[in-house]
Amino acid sequence: MSGNPIKYPVPPSLAQLGLGRLYANSQITELIPISTGFANSIFSFKKDGSSLILRMPPSIDPALIREVEVMKALFREGIPVPKVLEYDPANENPFGHPFMIMERLSGKNLFVAIEGLNDDERDNLMIQMAEILHRIHGVNATDLKVMKFTTLQSFIDDGLSSIKRFATLSDVKDFGNFDDWLQKNRPTEATYNKAFIHNDFHGYNIMVDGGRLSGILDWNGAVIAEEQVDVAFFSLLTEACGYPELANEFISEYRRISNLELGELNYYMTAIAILKILQVPLQEKQMIETGQMGKADELRTILNRVREGFIKTIEDNTDLSADVLLNTNIV
Image (tube, rainbow, N blue to C red):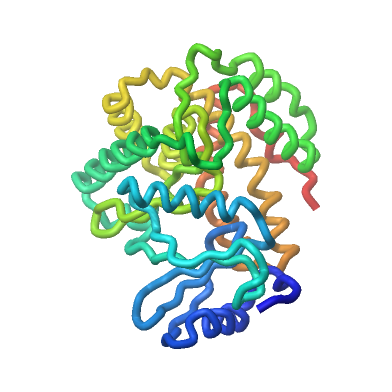
């Protein structure tokens, strides 16, 4: 099929039509929109009884090819990621729109699943998290078409540029003190632990089934950069969601497995907290403007849950008031 790309977000009727064309000899049932995957239209469905996921990005994007290649490579390495079954990054296909179809992982995201676990199961889960993350960081990504930051300076410059851009877009007044802190406290090149990283490693991207890690989602941002960032992101979100003791257990276990000091962890946790406090309201605004009300509500719920923890991390580490970051002029 050819033609103009589908207006985003993709309506279920067009997803159903595309699946019918793609799998003309199969039975497609239980097509259900999923209000996660904030940059994509995502649906769960069954093909001849098998549970699958259809993901459709907003437009043609080379990042889809890159992510598929990453996931296939990780799947071959035995990393628990969804198996990619079909994909097309262009519009010349049965959907008339870029798409990816993959197996649906069993279980629930970590922050939902953890409520049903006892203390021993939670402790064991943190060990699993540390072990799998260390395995990910050991993946040889030389041949993968991911961004490779050859120096720590370039990686941090890239991150701080994004933070300043979001501060500008949000019209944050008096952001200079935070910018000064981020520049003055940045880790030195000698601390660089260069590795393949997920770059968005947290409980909402981790699936758990029966107390066991069942898979890791969302590899779009994977890069070769500082491995402490993954540890920081997971720890920050876990603590902010109300599990500081589990965050500490995870850090201790990762430190033991990796033999890293993790001496710059507080810096990366602080930078991520600042970034997300500025970024998420802008994402929510964009979702509302494009009619993605369910996803906007989901994102707002997550931010409301973690905001207090993010603020505490920022203020404890910088001695600056986070009120500056909250008083924005997003319209």
